[in-house]
Length: 463
Image (tube, rainbow, N blue to C red; front, side):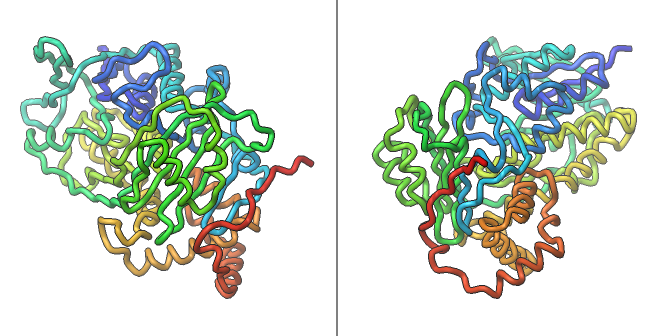
């Protein structure tokens, strides 16, 4: 008997989910609202595609595991292989990090190109079908509503005739705008609890031609905001085609303007002039695009007592993080890995397996949620909940780690590993690092660290 799986949504979480499902089902179909472009281009279903996207090292490691040779495909497509250390100019609250070889690599490119390369591999490597221009309107359940057996959908822009598809498994990967909670309540299930932490981040991005300047020996510039008072940060990524993606961001509704003069003037409020000096004479090749839908939002399906079999929810449809931390694509990869492990461990039709998956997924999200919201909760204007004593103590500990980073390569490497989700935050609590933190805590904090950075950007020393 032919087995079938449906994936609702064809962005990163949907593409990776479909790939792992193709190892366990005879037919896999992705139902996507958009029509995919024939070339790497921004589409409406990925509204952030114009902005900086970081593919963290852990995310790329999983993607390479799923698609062997993917890194070479990225490079053939023009993406830049990047070393987290020598290729970055990274300004933290403690100052500029030293530029040393961390041995941690990933590829950087536009979000449109990353999606395009993954989609092409999916087409080549497995029998996944794409059903484009279709809007899923609801779920079809068995007679007792205990199992989801299909979806109802209509063609976007068409005659609005409703059609249906049945399958052995349906996976919702439709992102922040997921209607899964409404679909479940229509079947008699409870709506999930929801958690939201909103630091009111907004950012604005412009693309440039990369200047031919030998003094620019970095490929990525990060400038972190400094809570609670310095609310502005920025990033410049070198991507395919000799282009820069330059993004300015502000917390607590300190949103960057979208006109050229205002955008540049806003950059002068960063804790360093490095961003302004880099872009002021660069040639712009796009308009300035803004984005403000950045709250952390978790739908707690893992807390439900009842959940229908044959239906799973992944990616941003479950938990969407503040995009400024660049965790989205890596979380999609981690979700796909869990989905693969779940399919391997038991028959997918086993009663209760869907609820177990959502609970396993919820457990896997805890650490990343605490990382993202713990940082956002440093700002007084953040809405969500008041940090408890443990959160405040952890924030103070991380502050002391931040003071060590610029002068200690071992601690900086541990920080980069955690930032790339390669290691858990507990790796910052080894006896060696805790001893350094204690000594640092007893050292008076230089006043300059609370305002603008006075130290020059570190140069890359070629030995």
